[in-house]
Image (tube, rainbow, N blue to C red; front, top):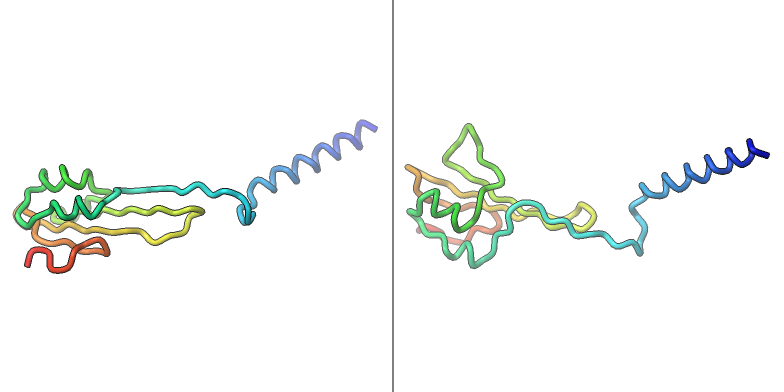
Length: 114
């Protein structure tokens, strides 16, 4: 009797634990997860060629990536996804002589600095 109870309890626990790892339940709520820097159109509109690094950081915040091998570039990346999907928004800021010269990425406005 005790052995049957232990086996039943063990099997029940195993089924319950494996059920927790199944994530394709169609009616389950998936929490949207935001990672990185939120960059708005208003923030990008404030950027002007010739701004210092400090001014750019004041407008956009601390960059997500500062490449130690290329200190003339800052990368701002933002993803908002439920369940791990979604395409990241990217903005790469380039400096020459510590002044803003160029923006790249899917958030960069057309013709910036020209």
